[in-house]
Amino acid sequence: MEVQKTALYNYHKNLGAKFVPFAGYEMPIQYKDGIVKEHISTRTHAGFFDVSHMGQFFLEGDETLTLALEKIIPADLKNLKVNHSKYSFLLNNDGGIIDDLIITKTEKGFCIILNAACKENDIKQISQFLTKNHKYLLNNDLSLIALQGPKSVEILEKLIPGVANLKFMTGNSFVYEGEKLYVTRSGYTGEDGFEISISNKNVEKLIDYLISNNVKPIGLGARDTLRLEAGLCLYGHDLNEKINPVEANLKWAIAKIRKEVGGFNGWEKIKNLLANGSEKIRVGIKPDGKVIARENTKIFSSDNNEIGYVTSGTFGPSVNAPVAMGYVKSEFSKIGTSIQLEVRGKKYGGKISELPFYKKSYVK
Amino acid sequence: MSEKKFSKKHEWVSLNGEVATVGITKHATEMLGDIVFVEVPDAGKAVEKEGQAAVVESTKAASDVYSPISGEITEGNKAIADDPGSVNTDPEGASWFFKLKIKDKGEFDSLMSKDEYDKFCKENPS
Image (tube, rainbow over the protein chains, first blue to last red):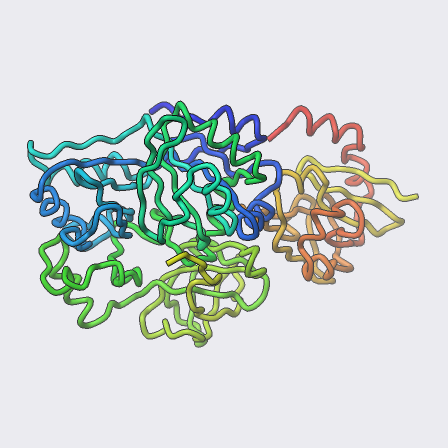
């Protein structure tokens, strides 16, 4: 398959982006400032992220569409209000996570934001449940821009009046440059911010405005350190088809009524895990010193038994220490439990830590 | 003044009598990005030419640092292990990685000069 580029590719190039292949796209990993500065400027001012590689999947239909989607998504879609969003998943028959996603109720149906690497398969999985009464479209004419950081609201409100009224995990339509665009208050950094769905043709104008307000471009490198400090999962690393939401410590994302009534893929298994607990569970991990426990680092108990593995690990610039997430046997998941991390053949001490590592500041 | 030479793996070596000081080049730090972890060898460790001697990690990835020259480590720079970010600010000065007592000056002589190294970097951009 040919490498894909977002509408902003040349714009990134002019900003001094270093590109890496990511999920079939050439994406900026960092710009001139580097990962740490990009990270800090998002936390202290605001940064923008081109996340147009993610799938913007629109579905239209009547209440049978809601019923169809509820077979594969364990959110309470029947009671989801228009312009409200939920974090959820696509589940397989074994309760494994096919993808994690944000689903928003729209006037005519739903919009689902899908991970770039998963979007083609996701649509195949979802469409199994759809009928000819349901319309769907993966809209590649739209870019998706995340604006994140404490100054986001002040900066975007000047350009698109009204966005300041949005609460976390809600959205609405606004008019910009004669275009109706959709803005949600959400993100993947632990900061207040927005995701703006805008036509490829107008996206450069929006970015010009952000840059003129000293909003820095942020690459995938800082996106990773920001989301890990915020304790948020990255699909393909912290989540995959063999991990279910209970193991992933994401049972909060399954609606209460759906836990009780079920009717979605893998419910039997998940119901059992909810009642009895899972063998392993996702936890936060803080190495004691400066050593970085990266993905696939083996985790040992203090008495040297292998108890798990790291799924994401990096240096957290705002925590000013290494941080990681991983899976351990549930009996070792208590916060403060001493563990050992095997890095380059040597064991280093660490502790099971609370998540997030960095306190979130969402506007509720 | 001590003479400074460079390796294809982007280490620098300066030789003062029998003792060589080794670090990573400015070019290497620019490729690595923000350095957040460093592990230096302990005194007494024997290293071979092009053998793994230290570790440097940026926000992106972990990389080995090789010794461009054989010998016995006399000192690892603990200061950079405590403050890894200093490698980005002064890679070819205060932020050296280790010192070693060399065995064969011929290994030092065979390394690249500053001009040769600069040319090598230009021809092998990454």
